Amino acid sequence: MLRAAAFGPMIAAHPNRPAAPARMTPDLVAPTLITIDAPISRFLLLLGLGFFFGLAFEEFYARAGQARPGGIRSFPLLALAGGLLYRLDPQRLLPFCAGLLVLGAWLTVYYWRHAGETDAKGTPNVGLVVPVCNLLAFALGPTALAGPPWLAVGASVAAVLLLTAREQLHGLARRIGIGEIVTAGKFLLLTGLVLPLLPDHPVTTLTSLTPRLVWLAVLAVCTLSYASYLLQRYVAPKGAGLWVAVLGGFYSSTATTVVLARRAAAEPAALAQAQTGIVLATSVMYLRMLAMILVFNRPLAAALAPVLLGLSAAGLALAGAWWWWAGRRKAEPGAAPPPANPLELGASLVFAALFVAISLASAWARATFGAAGVYLLAAIVGVADVDPFVLSMAEHGPAQLPVAEAAVAILIAASSNNILKAGYAMAFAGPRASAAPVAILAALALAGVAVAARIAGLW
Figure 1 (tube, rainbow, N blue to C red):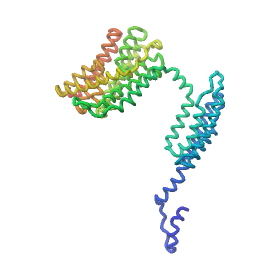
Figure 2 (figure 1 turned 60 degrees about the horizontal axis):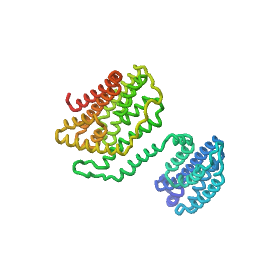
Figure 3 (figure 1 turned 180 degrees about the horizontal axis):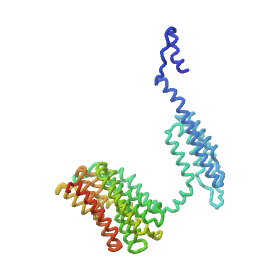
Figure 4 (figure 1 turned 180 degrees about the vertical axis):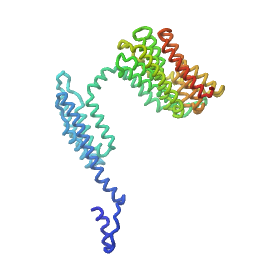
């Protein structure tokens, strides 16, 4: 029909000529696709999401033995009503607002009528989940018709997950104390308030570092440490000492080494697990370093990836071999102490100061003594805190050092830090109990130095 309508005049003008093959131009096809297919797909999306939301709502309350307004029929109808009222006046939204007021008035009456009731456990029926779900189903119609599809799908899935995960979410709320909420607030403060206020230009001629870059380095360490802290505290099962050691490597391999070394001295039954955990924490430290470098300097990360991944794999293999050879003896559940809060503002300010100081020292050492000065500085700072040095090399290594020299400096710092942890293990656990992890840490340190010497062209 479309071809006849479009080319009818051409055929009539030349009755004795054979008709030329009709060509469907984009101008003729596009309006048909836009005016038919898109509204149909939006309409089907509206009904499908309303059906999905209503099915989850009805099934959830059916399992709980409760009858609530809404369900597999009501929610698609609410979504359809909201969509149609929106289409009547998509500019001023007067019909949609009127429908929203009517639905809100009915839900207010329902809430007022049932607010005084209690369930079988005596809990007052004052929840807002049912009215909110009905309002969300009503708003789902115009969202599916006018908004991007991902918004309607995402809102529906999020609503279903929040609805059906009631017990898990309430259990999580009971487990989390007020201190954890304050910690999360500190994290939001560091990321959402402090960072946007910092200038992104140098404030002194002594260094090209900007306050924003310094704080980004602080956030990189804090984010990794905070994620590890949450996993250790709320996800890792009690008594899973090896898992705690792995997560501790992302948090702080030095602190984890001290804790496990003390545990090895105090609990002979947990000796094998503590020894293995010390090696695991250091093995994971290489992955932590690679992740931080990748955020700020991809060329440097690409150069160091084979070395750091190789050292991490070697450490994991040695830890597994020792755990198998030592008999896989398990420690008593709950023996490991909880990790400390990694988001203390004082500690963050100290880290920022160390980062700036090490960056200035690296620039001075490079200008005065060349690459050898930076290598010596790497060996010195490795016995304190390796993270500020690694991030200073990652953020401004290309401006001060070639990639190869920055890689050598980072490997030296990591090896120096391994020697420090070996010393901590020997001091807190004793020479005999710490012999195995000390030997492995020393081997990893020597391997790192050997690779650094190879990159530097010393052999």
